[in-house]
Length: 134
Image (cartoon, one colour):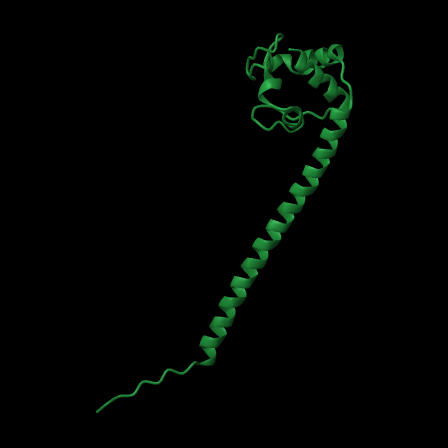
């Protein structure tokens, strides 16, 4: 005798497929939302920093004022002659990094243990001019 097998989709397997599809779409939605929020945060933060950098680069800095700022904020890590202690030697920093990269390093503290500094554009311009004088 031959047995015949019939495969019929039941409502329970159909419901399981729907549940699985719903879970997948929820996860895709969550991932997309996370990417959207992260991208928005990066865009607006990046835009703000670009405005700050452009404003700073338009200003004329003072070596004397920059030297004072350096001595008040940077000597502890970079040394009185900017030859480095905990932080790196800054004597030729303007040859290794462009001005925008230096500004970003100061205001964001990109490489640990460098802290970030809240510094107005004029003072940043002063510090940048001082670094160029080293």
